Image (cartoon, rainbow, N blue to C red):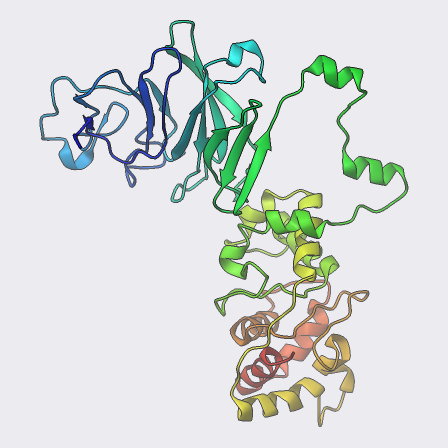
Length: 390
């Protein structure tokens, strides 16, 4: 074993350029130097013994802040291609097949895994690096994208392999999926009568209301899972569980977050990135999941049951069970949400917001009436009871 190269920070993907035989490899720039600094890299090693700059350089030609007063090696090898900071280039594969157009021959494909700590996400795509007839990198462009929708990332391209037929396999370690990218010339597609179609437009022209796809929603829910759980049962009590929630209610709430009618620092940006179809797909997926009841304190839950059912209320219409059902199933057609299995901390916070007039909704007038009559102890008790509803 011997050292081939030094000064490499965090390299994952490498491959040999088919024309020159040179080793090319990706390298991730240093974190915590700002949103736009330093660059991520594609490097080329024509021979052994080269030094690629780290730790003296944080990425590209930018010096590392902690090593600014240190002298880097005189013969530092700089990257052949620089990428935007934080895009996280990982897998690298040169095109050795004949499937794609001739100008793609011996070009490179790079999987950008995507940023993890940038204020506005970047990356989440496949880049094409163009090479000339002498095997030198001369440009770059986006080859495949779509895993990042606004600020919502639902997938993370990780590595690339090429099949014998020339098509590409793209792994996604966020979804646990593999995608295949193939190619058909525009002439062939036209001859076969293939034209792009907008599913939502077709549905509306047919007089149908577009519906959500649970299967599509499962993929799109990957980012939501950080707070709400992969199956809609959230892991942390401040964030609501979405499993089993009525689809129409979820679409209504996402629209409210998007428009600002329901202000939220956490939900504003993710909701802004969603199309109407995205909302329907997400809602369809979470509505199909099963809410999980949670452990509670029995004595407090029994008191909460009495509050929930409106026992001893002068106006039984203000009982929670009137709108939300005996077991918290809600009423989809009337727009009343499912409550069963919801975290007690989240339910209590929403009741207090209604009482304070800071949570607005189509039913906020009724909800304020209900919430303002409840004491702090009542709110804690009813929220505890709701959490245990199966």
